Image (tube, rainbow, N blue to C red; front, side):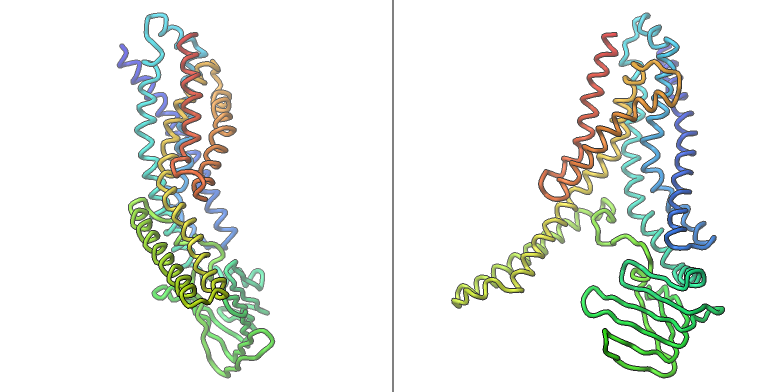
Length: 396
């Protein structure tokens, strides 16, 4: 009888979870694709190519919420129909009622971690690749509609008109990270994508290069300018960000960062030591030393982020379990048969407690103020609140 009751609970939870997961994942994917459509001006083919890459990104947010929705709905309805009370009256303790769902949530948690890792190692690079391979059509489409195209990475094009594939009187502005900005004007030009070298080639006719107020040169006839694709796209993830590495690669990146820090420390010690030995005390405060100190500080922040990242992904993945740990006793206590009432009552403390504490722990850990495992602070608080609620379920 108990086994059949456990199976009944699991079937009910999985039915609701499947329906809610499909709906939530579809909404998130559509929202993500629309966002990219607005940001980049993608065409229909590129949008279709984006869909598979958005799937793991959508799942990592949809799975915990939809699992909580299903569990709260099932246990809230059972409690409202006095099924929980009936089972307790025949000597079935509350833990026997909760155990199968808690085991299910615990098994889902590593899958959620894997989904998050897949989103980083396959989903986001795939999205960036589709956008970069579509950049030629994106730029042409935006220029036809708005006569200008610009990115946040110091690249912009303004044209008088677009006729077929020709840019009429284009003006190209390049703002490198170091150095003076450059302006290129021409009578006409064409764009050509080179996916092998990951560059956008701009073929120009009768071009003139200007740097600031100085004319660098005029080039009658045909000339060419190359723009790296990561600068030509309007949006794009920093490929060196710790959040862009797969879990299997983070350990190696930590070792590389540690070696880089040791090298910078040796360079700084050598520079300062030479100045001290030679009596050049006025040279201790110099641009080279300042740059090395800045590199050490920046490297330390990057190391803290690298060490925090695995803890963050595991904490977010196991939020599936801790959401359910809190949701079951809270839904039983609410005794509401309405799906959204039960879910709202369970999600509100998560929204008000879990996410702020998770963000606080993550921020402090990334800055090296708190240890990396501080990102589990939100999960710990949910566990304690859930434990208190379960004791109430036992007593009443």
